[in-house]
Length: 308
Image 1: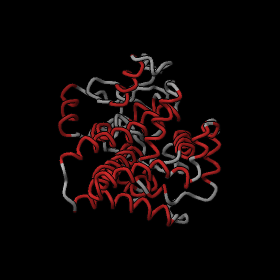
Image 2 (image 1 turned 90 degrees about the horizontal axis):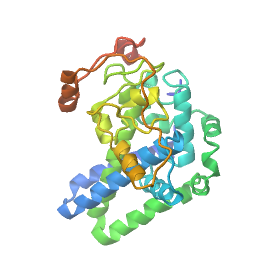
Image 3 (image 1 turned 180 degrees about the vertical axis):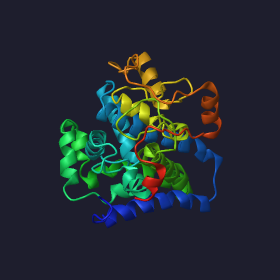
């Protein structure tokens, strides 16, 4: 449905270029002094996407003070994760139309489209349609300001300049663009891998094809337990089993203990039907090997999906 829409060439070049900068770091000398900064930037950018853009701003799974919201919003802007209004509107629309022909990033349209190309081939009028679902976000002054690209890019440019003038070109590539490369692809994998028929497991019978995937969950700060999320969208925790490691859940829990998060929607007794119960042995296999657990309840087979 969307694959033949006009390509946003500028955005496509920008996304490819940003990832190329991350790969270009491999051509430079790595210094161990970069490592703490790399980890901080990966954590700040990644947790800002999962905790702020997704679990707070999109689903209102908890509340936190204004200064902390701005800190995380800035982290998402530094990583160029997407301006908050567009991000929230697109994601709420995804929940409304998940895995139908109208779902902008369903693997029904092909894996490449679900992973990244949906960002650069949005149909005409899609932005205006999805923005209706983010009217509350547009009331926040910095979210409204960051709808304009020339304002949105400022936090990124300031951090990039600081890294360049203190660590040089190699330090800039390693400390900013390598974390962004990883954040991007794990975030996009939630849309692509976590909606594929056989790349994960399901605990809940939902109307979409969402799956839980341990490795995506690990790299995307808990977002990979996507079937859990689609079953309980407002829940602040996506990992619901002890072995479903959900870093974002633990950060929200810590903030709550320090009085920096409240009205948290924690998991409640499950009212939805569970499917494919995972045994202790299967849990161990998932942790060690990312084992695949097929879901026979899906009405679209892997071969049907590949042929589309």
